Length: 104
Image 1: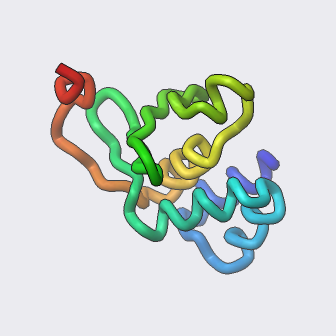
Image 2: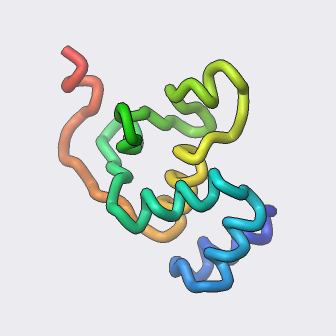
Image 3: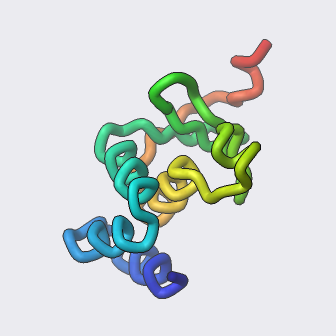
């Protein structure tokens, strides 16, 4: 698995073989992560990454996510996978603001 992330970081590109490897490694979560990347649903604020989900936006910080899959089931959710892909490839939208300011 670390090999996958290393290759992705080295190339910075999501070619067909890396996409297939992500889907094979993470199943439906990997596929959802790739769909989110392709749709531009990953945003990088000054303080957090935020992933736009179907029903809400989810804050991702390091290996933590605010979604229920992560919070209640303790699983690696697709939001975490999407952010990891986004960080390696630069495929995210930078937002010149602090996300925490939007919570007020």
